[in-house]
Image (cartoon, rainbow, N blue to C red; front, side, top):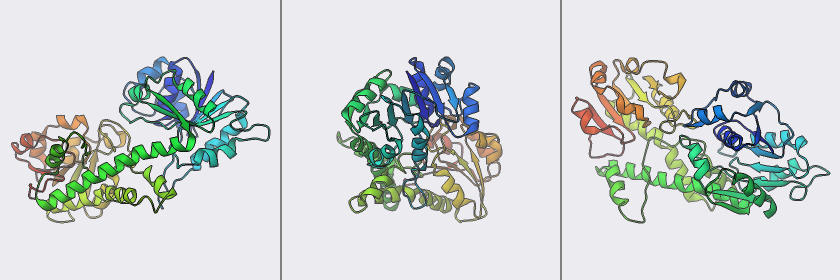
Length: 413
């Protein structure tokens, strides 16, 4: 069986590699020539635990154009535009690209996260030809991805999956295909239900994170520690509040819930408010920075972490860049991240030389190993603002640092 995967990004590459490892012939397609060249040269353009080793043992071929296959899997991005409306350009383009290659008995699977109704109302009409009808001559299914950067291979194997077909027969076929490597349960439903279920997974997390961020804001007003409040509240057996932070990044949590708001704006007010709360956190973080510094301009500030998530190289929708934009108007800002080439080339200690404040934005494991005694000696003002409750307060304060924590109103700036 031959599988053609459209979109070689954070979802497409691990998925293609996983199918290749199970003996399938896989062709990966991407419009980016550098990505295609890298894969065909046996080099992966993304960083992911265990992926390079699996790929080296089970490589697949990459191409700029699709080929005739038995299965087509669409794994392209679905961002939002400046009005927070979904941009389905890549999904539409991928559907048009594979349409000429579809034949009888083929299986087409959309993994991209999309608004409810996209599979039936947008993808299906593009794929159908005069002599081929979806649900009769070929199968069309929506199977939303459910993985997180940093642990993709394990989650591809162990997470439960949903197969939402325009017909039950198609969903069952897709279930049989993914059963070749998925160890979790695979549930069969219709396409629109599968689309909505995926969106609600990320919406739940969006709302929960917004609550945690609001607890941080409230705690600073009340003069208490939000992290302790959340820890104690979570001792209740039916409470699980997430952690606050400087903003929400990634392609899912800050993006997908807008698809629900777009489809049902009047019924999704809580979701909208949660999104806006999370979107406000970079500005809230910057205001805290200015409070610590005692002003808004003329400072040198070193930021630790460019990615949206710890221990990955994924910078999609990272709040760090909103924070940089707000700070650098009237300040000197340096940014260091050991996982992102662009921000790891300069030495960390050079970035911190003579700076007024060190701000930890991402809890990369490497930041535990920083020589804070050395930083204390080279910084103009040895001040640390921890937005993730990651650095041991006692260890740095004993070295002479002034320590500040996002959401801790008991620490007076």
